[in-house]
Image (cartoon, rainbow, N blue to C red; front, side, top):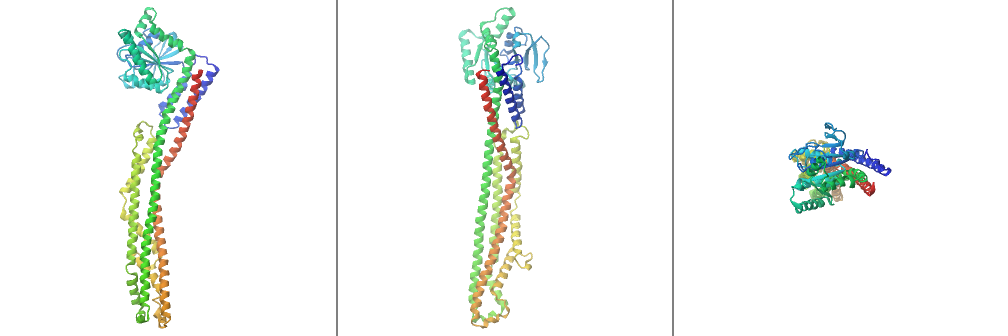
Length: 576
């Protein structure tokens, strides 16, 4: 708006708008926004200081260049039935000169037409140009416009490509003026009215408002101008709208509102992207909660299974105590005095009849417990691999190609891929035999600390037998030298009751120590297993929680900026 003297209120609105646009650009630049979108915001802010920009768009051969020539009153731009505009052309006021390229690659041409004193006109490639990059140039330039002049041809009005391009313009919040060119090709007023009604109906539904619409013939208007004659009424109405209805006050309003439309679109676009990512992360959080719930169930199952095995071991030891008491009742009698004098035979009988295969049975139960635990851990790893595998495949990740390297989707995908691969490797290489052997070794090492020094490197069953024999032998007192006290009639019942009490006490102590060893060993293993699982998903969990918090904050910031954009736009619309 360098050519326009702004009021104090207009200048203040422009200052506020510029600050808001730069603030939004900074927010998006600090995230994962497409650099083109950030540049668009910066261009929109810069455009506040430029001339009013009238951008002419439409399919090739719709007569865009002819329309501009008619406005200029000279056949200045090339016209033809093939795509003649392959680049952006910006028309500015000035003496005729050779076109030059600006820093964006657009061709700047000057012409001493009075209308160019008030605005700049942009001629764009056709929306259906054969070379698709030409269309991309048009799409990238639309956000900079203050007013879009959309030209369609009367002989093929409102084509599918025009509908798509007009929808693109609408998304940027631009004011659109429709021109139906080449009405001279139509036969009669009825056909003319039918085409006008068709274009107006479809455009109104697409834009949610009835745009200004002008049926005309740029060819006839230019011919009249070149002959020095008045232009046809339909073209005169069009010019009147552009330069009278859209007077200076209205152009200032459009100039101020156009960048806000750009900001509004980008806020909406990135708010939707934030919501999509938050939805994905909320599913990730649910996955993490499921994993945590499974770990809790894993712990509970292990505790229940341990209690089951503990009770089975306790039952075996209680049975041994019951057999021992029966053995004492049968052995410590006057009728068995001669047998009591043979300590070696008595000990052998005790081991055979009381201890029996109890150590082997305990060993089998411990091994069963170990095997179950190893299988349960393997099942946890398989479940974790399934969870992570499902999270790697999502619709959002299929769009990773358009994101900058290092962006949200890329980081999340790479993280899940890395963790998932590590988990799969654990599952594939999980050696149940080795894991079970390790646990057996852990239990045996713990039991060895409470066993006799001679236990050495014997097996778990032999070690348990040594423990049981050692504990019960001392408890019975059957190895006391000569058992001289049995000669007293009153001594024998006392020794029998004492032997039973000592057996219960010693086996009870052994049972407590054995329970403690098993409990400590398996509690440590459960904790180690759970820690391994948690450590595996920890990078994923940290990423999810950090991104979720960051995206929530970003969403709040975008909402705040969006509200400020709406407020400022309402002030501009109220009257700049």
